[in-house]
Length: 182
Ligand SMILES: CC(C)(COP(=O)(O)OP(=O)(O)OC[C@H]1O[C@@H](n2cnc3c(N)ncnc32)[C@H](O)[C@@H]1OP(=O)(O)O)[C@@H](O)C(=O)NCCC(=O)NCCS
Image (spheres, rainbow, N blue to C red):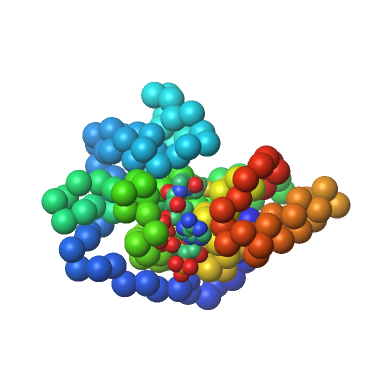
C-alpha cells in the first residue's frame, strides 16, 4: 500500500495511562517479545530484527517507537523505516506494526500510528509505503484509515485487491483463507 501526499496523517490522542518510548540499545528484546505475541502469521525468528533493521540500525532511535502500558511494559511497536522502491527512490516505509493481543481492539494502534507516521512524514515528506498480507484485514483497515491505498500496478494486483477489499467489506475484518502478499 502507498501514500503519496504531503498532508498530515490523522491524529489520535493516546489515553493518559499509556506512553511512548523510542528505541534505545536493548529494545530488540521488547520488539521480539511484542512481535512474537502479536503476529500469528510470520515466524518471529531471533534473526528477524537484524534482518529487518540491521543495515541501518543507527537510524533506529529516531524511527522505532514502542507503546508502553501503565507499568511501563512494552505492548506495541511500529517503525518509521525507509525502503528502496523499484524505480530506485527511497521512500518512507511503515514497518512491523504490532499490538499484543491483550491490548488489541482498544484503539491503541491509532495513536501509535499517528506518532510514527508523522515521524515518517518528517523524514520522508511525500511518499511512503508498506507491505502487508491479505490475511491481515485488521491491519489493512487500519492502514486505509491512515490514507494508504492499495498499489495496483498489474491486472493480478487489481484482482487481488478487489478480492481483499470485498472480503474486508463483507466480513468486517475476520478474513480467512489465503490470498497472498500485497
Ligand atoms: C493490526 C493491529 C496492529 C491493530 O491494532 P489494534 O490496537 O487492535 O487496532 P485499533 O484498536 O487501534 O484499531 C484501529 C483500526 O484497525 C481496524 N481493526 C483493528 N482490529 C480489527 C479487527 N479485529 N477487525 C476489524 N478491524 C480491525 C479498525 O479499522 C480499527 O479502527 P476502528 O476501531 O475505528 O474501526 C493488531 O491487530 C495486530 O498487532 N495484529 C497482528 C500483527 C499484524 O498483523 N500487524 C500488521 C502487519 S502488516
